[in-house]
Length: 121
Image (cartoon, rainbow, N blue to C red; front, side, top):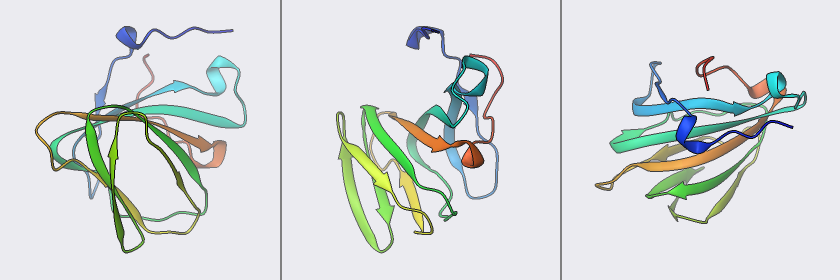
């Protein structure tokens, strides 16, 4: 059973359309023996955001540091350390950080929704 130390996770800049000031890395997934899902760690820097998008899989999130917001459909939800979110499939959503400190959260998706952020841990 792998143990991943948070201090050893190397965040990579995410460069794709609709993303600004966002970093991430896959933490636990198929290479660690979890064949059905992938757990990722994301960091959104002040002023940054994820793409405003939707897809046919759900995901679960847990805020590990800072604060930010999640637009889920038309509603904007404020998030802070310790908050959990569930993003249903086929609902347009976007994470953003309008604050002065980095916003970090765990994101768990099923295998079909996992696209490697970076190969190194």
